[in-house]
Each structure stands twice: as C-alpha cells, then as structure tokens.
Image (cartoon, rainbow, N blue to C red; front, side, top):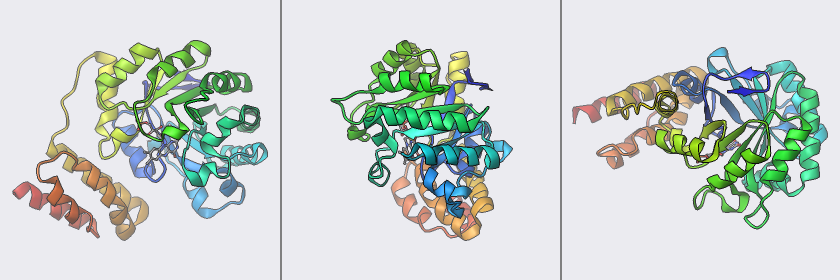
Length: 321
Ligand SMILES: Cc1cc2nc3c(=O)[nH]c(=O)nc-3n(C[C@H](O)[C@H](O)[C@H](O)COP(=O)(O)O)c2cc1C
C-alpha cells in the first residue's frame, strides 16, 4: 500500500483520535501492527502562534512511525503556514487534513467537517498545504458531507485529487449523524470508483472480519480503525494478520490485557510523569477491562489509581479473586 512516496507495510491504519492518540497510544498501535498512526488533530492557528501545548502534540519518535500529523483549520493561508512549520520542525511521514470533525468548538470556526460546506475553500486549503508540505504527502479525512441531504464526498475526493492530495479517508457518515446509525460503506465504494488515489475506508470496523468485509465490499485500499482500539491495541495486529493470511488469531486473554495495560501505563508515566500519567491512564484502564467478569466493581478502583504501583495492585487483587 502506497500513499504518495510513502510505502506502508500493511492496510490497517490507527485513526487520529483527539485526547487519545498520544505518544503511548501510538507506540502500542505501531508495535501491535498498525501500518500508520496519526497525532490527535492539531490546530493550525495554535501552530502558527507557536503555542507550546499545540507544538507538543506533534512531537514523535521513530517507534511511532510511520506517523501522520493531522491539522485542522479553515484559513488556507494559516493552514499553509502551519504545514510549513510542520515540515521544517517535525517532518512527519504524512500530513493529514481534518475535514471531518463534528465537534462544535471546531466547526464553529468553520474547521473540521464545516469545510465540506464550501468546496472552493476545501480546494484552497489543500492546495496551500500541498505546496507548503513539499515532499511530504498530504491526505484528507472527510465525512460524507455536512448532513445526509448534501453528500459531497465524491466531489471532495475529486477536488482533493486535483489539488494534489495523495489519499482520502472517508468516515462514511455525515457530520449531522455524529456517531449514530451505521456507517454507509457503499459511499466508500462510490468514492473508490470516482478517484484514482488511495481511498481509506473508515467507520464501524470492530473485528478482523469487518475489515475484510469492508475491503471486499468497497475495494478500499486500506482500513482505518478508531473506537474499537481503545484499550485494545491488539486489534491492529489481529486485523493485519487476518487480512494477510485469512487466519483469525484468538482474542487476547485477561492476562494478556493486564500485561499490555501495565506496559501502556509505563509509557504514560514515561511520557507525562507518574502523577499525571497514572491519572491519564484511568480512562484507558476502563477500556482495557471492558467485558471482563466483575468489570463493574473493578472500574471504580481503577478510576482512583494515582501511581503505576496502584494499577498493578488493583490487577493483582483482581487476579487473586
Ligand atoms: C474520542 C474520539 C476522538 C476523535 N478524534 C478525531 C481527530 O482528532 N481527528 C479525526 O480526524 N477524527 C477523529 N475522530 C474520528 C475517528 O478518527 C474515526 O473517524 C471515527 O471514530 C470512526 O471510526 P471507528 O468507527 O473505527 O471509531 C475521533 C473519534 C472519537 C470517538
């Protein structure tokens, strides 16, 4: 699978996830088989103002690569300037443009999915970023449109191709749908038929079989996995393995998950320090234990952990029972 000049070793991509796809998440995603990871979406306005917190979101190391930095914003000039900074200071494998975010804070300023309401603007933004990004491939991530009545994904895909984008990811829902209902995979197929750059299909993949089904039904070039990977980095490898061999690896056991949750905690603490790292880890722990017997009683204890040792203790107690 190739995106511009970037060769990927598989077809399974880890989604950009605000508040979630930070360095520890990405290290595990790549380690467990994702062919590409992304930063959380990063504000182009924050970048050109050199805001420290914004810049920190884009720092990465080789164990998270290949990595895409995802930008959002609605001003072509600002997006171009931001892309130039990204290229010079961070040099990721890819720059992705967020034209899909439905969150009010973002669309109020015409960013994210709001860009899809004005395809002239969409094109201007892509052109500005492609020019500034130089050799770094630029991709876009879209929803099917602002609302169900006005699907624009095919037009947006054609425009992106024309403006120099190297691939398009489609989360096959309109902005107004949020996460409700089922993603419309037929839209992915239609987009694939309409453009000759790679199409990455996204929406509602939960199992390796779903990924296979999406590729078979839509002919998309790769799949992107989001929510089901929370507390479940194993999914990238299980999907990758299934797509490559047709063999379904077993679900990870509780002990496998505990081992990985502790490794995740270690990475969190390494990245953010003991106190902040352990606190940030709480929500991920809640996801790791999803579906375990006794998870309801376990969660309140996990949501109070202050240190790595606390986490280990809670799991030791759980296993003893
Ligand atoms: C908590 C959360 C944060 C997200 N943050 C981003 C983001 O920063 N950029 C983006 O393009 N999409 C973002 N998304 C959308 C996902 O990348 C993905 O398109 C969506 O979850 C559908 O895929 P899934 O069904 O596999 O979860 C986010 C989704 C969730 C649930």
